[in-house]
Image (cartoon, rainbow, N blue to C red; front, side, top):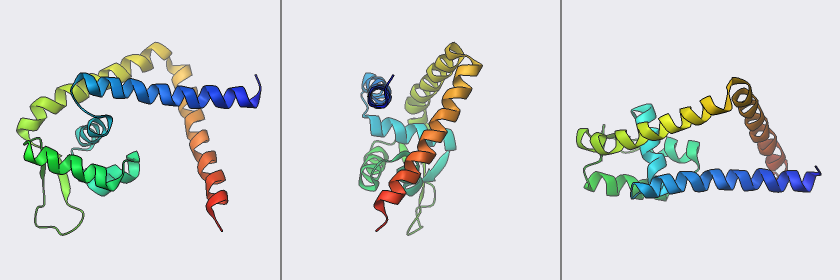
Length: 146
């Protein structure tokens, strides 16, 4: 298989995986980005909007919008309200009832996929995705430097 075809398959697969996550979020009446915010908070317990934005590639304004909207809905709350910057966000008890089930179900689905793939394939995928990320950052860094 030539390089052009490999690149097309890789980028298409990445897009299709993202679409599957979007469909899952939509089945709960959520956007992909809001699902990711809830996923991160379920995983970490609490964290800053900045961390969510930087680690998951969601624009800061989008994360802020989701957090503010979710606070109004009683789903999220600030842990340290008095902080000027880097306020910690977490899921409320009420929000946890709505969010935890959805996120835990998604995590179980991901675990089932990993089990279906088997130890060897998932280890290979993990190593390859880490290598792709590392090399893409390297190539992009060279291109973006003046």
